[in-house]
Amino acid sequence: MAVRAVRGAVQLERDEAGHMAEQVGVLLSAVLERNALTGDDLISIWFTATPDLHSDFPAAAARGLGIVDVPLICAQELDIDGAMESVVRILAHVETGLGKADIQHVYLGATAALRKDIAQ
Image (tube, rainbow, N blue to C red):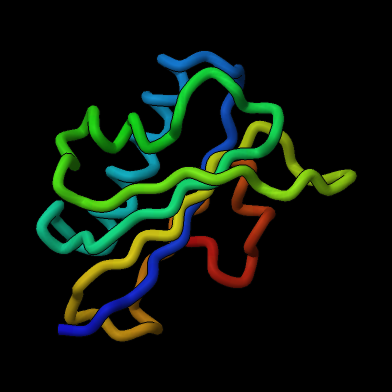
């Protein structure tokens, strides 16, 4: 087994806690599914949110999915002029047998434009 990093992002339609939980849950589920991972494979997850998101902590969505024994942390993205708004990003550290080139990074919807080089 190796330690790998998996990236992902989702853009929210509105700044509401329930919507954030739903969309971040979809993102986390897609990351796990596309990489054949379970909660036991997770080491830690970093969440970032753009400065316009205030309704909740993105990590709360992970707890809602039952990811309760994994260290999680939230931070704010840099406030860069012209950057995509209403975006939650993740950086998950996982144990996996996948090679670096086999990791499926997940950029949902419009966020695929953020990383055209690795978005699946």
